[in-house]
Length: 163
Image: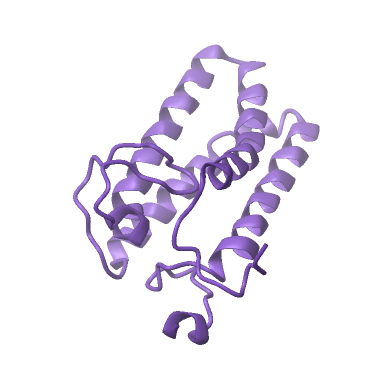
């Protein structure tokens, strides 16, 4: 296997998708468990809100990514494998509005379950640690090999970018 920082990641595989979805599932399921113990209605609201935030992220962040702008009908990325491309491609640098909307949606999604998680400190700890693990895995394995050079999180070396 190539060292993660030795080559750019031009294509994702189903196993990449499954790996990151499993990592993402831990904080999401933890939040759902905390909320459903109090209210089924708020659980459905959280799931709907999460789906809406996912659509916002897809629209304002992902539509600029080279994995989205390829001439394929469906996405093949680490979070949206197989999704149809509902939105027009917008290659290039993220605008300030894209960043604000994307970061706002992500922050709102992460904060939404905190009320219920505070009532279950054990679940709160799992939630926080699993989010840190997910972020660390993405940063460590993806940001240094990312082909979206305009992404603010891109950490690919100049040597890789020029190769």
